Image 1: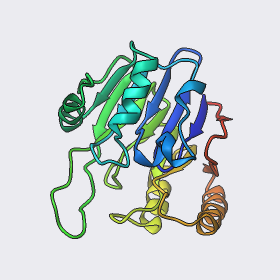
Image 2: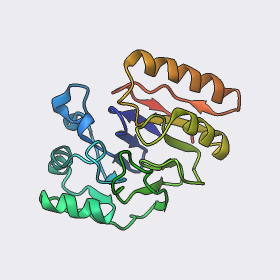
Image 3: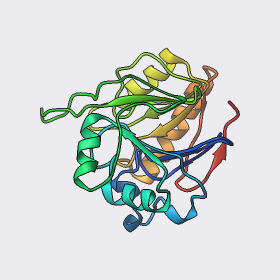
Image 4: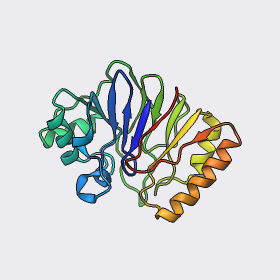
Length: 213
């Protein structure tokens, strides 16, 4: 499995059989520089959106992906389907073959407001992406773990990794950190989780790496 991160929570996941993009949000849009280059993707079968917040679901970016790969499936919550429908993008809320949804409610927002529908996604029995949630109790061997958020904390993220014990952790949802802070926190996660037999991958935007799963 080859994984490439494109800012914040956007992941490109490539296997010999299928390729998917997870949570292509506004922070990953090409206009911001450190971006998901749609022209550099050779194949795309699926686009998954865990919830409708702009940092996970950017209609313009998704439209460019679909324009390049018209047969790609777009899958998300009912709210995502409705939001993308307004932008003329067809999406569905049923898990395609090889994918399972799991319960992962969006964490409470501050100041208090309605949280969106949020789905956790198990992909090909290998990778789990919980979206904006620290409230889930299952994972596959590879976990895309939100490590920082206004609704959560790196302490809870670390504890969750210890509880669920994935073989690999991919840090996501970390746009809010300065580069220096990100590097320091990545070092801490790598060292501390490594002591527990969990491999933490210090992802860098646009740099692919392979995971044997």
